Each structure stands twice: as C-alpha cells, then as structure tokens.
Image (cartoon, rainbow, N blue to C red; front, side, top):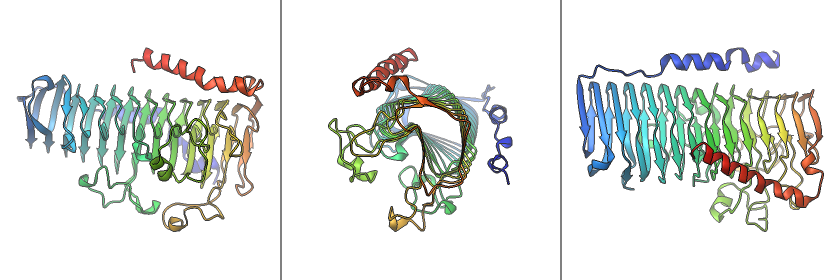
Length: 460
C-alpha cells in the first residue's frame, strides 16, 4: 500500500468536511409556540418544543444552574454577565436535545460554564467566559454542531470535545491566558474515551488509564478554523485520540507547552495553513508542573524556565496525519518533533524559521524537524509501557518540500527511526541567527511585542 493511499487523503479534503458540516448546522428561526423569561435560578426545562428562552443575567435572582433536557427546536438568547458561584459544577447543562441555538451567554468565575451531552444539530455563538476554574465549553457524545465567535479568557481550561462527538465546527474563537497546566487544560482539547464514560464522569474522570485500543469513542470530523489559542499554560490544541479532524488558518501563539500535540493514537488529521510561534518555553514552572510532566531530571534555567523546551508541533503516538503549508517560527524546543511511535505522517511544504531559541547548555540542541524514538529500548514509563501507549521508533514518515532556516542542524533523525523519506527540502541558515547570541536572544521579546499588538488588534 502506498503512503498516500494509507493516509486516505482523498477522503479528507477540507472542502468536503466544510460542506458536510454546513449542511447540518442548526437553523432555528421559529415560529416559537412558547416564550420564557429566565428570571430566577435554578431553572429547568424538560420535554418542550418550539421554545424561545431569554436570559438577562443582570436581573437574575437566586442562584444555581440551568438545565435543559429532552427538548428540541429552541433558542436561548442571553444578555449581561452572570457571576457564577463556585459550588455549581456546570452553569448551563443541555442533555439529549435537538436543533437549538445558544447565543450571547456570558459568565465570569465559577467552574464549568456549558455542558452539552448526547445532543445534535446545535450552534453556540458569541459565548464569553472569563476567570472560571474549569472549562468554558464541554461537548460530549454529540454531533452536527458549531461553536463560533466564542471567547474564553483567564479560565483554567478552554473547550473540550470528548467521546464520540463528530461533525463539529469550532471557528473564529479566541482562547487565551488559560491557567491549567495539564494536557487536558489546552485551549482546545479533543479527547477519546472508552464506552464506560458517562456525563457524570466529566471532566475529571474521562482521562482513563487505558490502552488506545480500549478508547473507542473518538472525536472525529471536527474542524478548528480561524481560531487563536494564545498564552495558555498548556498546549494551544491537544489531540488525545482524535480522528479525521481538520485544523486550518489558526494562530497558536506563546503557549507554554506545544502549539499543538498529536497524541494517544490521533490519526488521519489535517493541520494546514496555521501559524505556530513562540510555543514551548515552559516558563516559571511550579514543582507541581514539573512533577506532572515528568521533567524533574532537567535543570531549571536562570529565568525559572525548564531546560527541556517543547516544539511548536509534537507528534507523539500519532499516525497518518498531514502537517502541511504551516508557518512555524521562533518556537523554543524545535519546530516539528516526532517523539515516539510517529508513523506514516506527511510533513510537507511547511516554512520553519528560528525554532531553536530554547537551546541551552544542559541539553543537546533542538532542530527544525526531529524524528525520534524516545522510549524505544529504554525504561521510560516502564509501569504502563505494555498496556497504555506504543513505545516504538518513528518510522515511514514523509518529510518533503519544506523550507527550513534554522540555527544549527535543521533536520535530525535518530538511528532507531528508519525508513523515513526525506526529499525536496530547502535548507539554509536563518539570517537572524548568523550574528551573535546576544542578537538571537532579542528575537523572543521582539516577537512578543508584535504578538501583543496583534492580539489587541483582533480584540483579545
């Protein structure tokens, strides 16, 4: 079987995915047979149809959550900002509903803002969440949905699409300054689970210590487009077993871990035409962060950051993914790194510039593109090695037609990683790196100033 056939790119065109999702987005226009004003909490609605709900947060009385279950053909329009109490796990819970819109919901504080489970044909637009101690949005076992023009700022975590959720569109969203440092706290997190997970397990218990083969409920056919994930303590995007997803025209900026990580058997995904910059510094780490990421053996630098930097893009237990036509620049621990068990991936037509700004005296230098076999033949994660993940070399990857301008060795393949095809790449020394180290150190500060201006222009 050829590499191209194995990756199935003919079935993964972005135009086909967009068309499919556009056909099934919710279009609730009425007429509405009932209208409700939500003026006090808690509030619940069950087994209703054709409902228009209005929520004015500035006039709410009481406290508690909103529950909507087994309803269809409804719209909830919100105004004002709800200041949430920490006691309620979710502010708005929607279960087993069909054909609905949530528009204009705004919250500050509290825990998790929105949970949608076992629902289909819905749209969430103009949601704004600030300073919550949880997720802004969690979508579980749901299909045919759109999250658009949403903003999540200063939360613990951003958006999680989990379980057998499919045919979803996340577009024109801004997610920034997230405080959570675990992988599950990423700006956008697509998470596979076993069939045992229920809504009651969310979000704390859906990260199961099970093998990839047992996590058969996988998010699939999710589009993430025109979305900015910036200044997160974890990744911008984290794929935990996602399948057939498309990420296009996004900005992944200044996240403390990777811009994006393909993990836990994520496959057949397309990551194209994105901007990935200033990720992976691992700055100002706490003892808990060091323990969670198993990096205590790597010294801290004088500025308090870890010497073990991360790349803009990681492929770690990921296969048959396409990473193409991206702008990858000034990341700390390399541009693209295939860490372990990265197989049959295609890395092509990307532009990589100055992705080794985290080079330091404690570790070997980072590279523009690295193909590694971390864990193969070693004692890494011995306890779970046979049951959870694959610890194999990275093999049969295609690295072609990329432009690399790096300081030092632009491409590196370790000796255990065999049968990778490397051809047609243009490699030259980055002009910004030819001067002194002092000049190189000025690059991150310069880029941060430009990033700050960019974020304010787009309204972040």
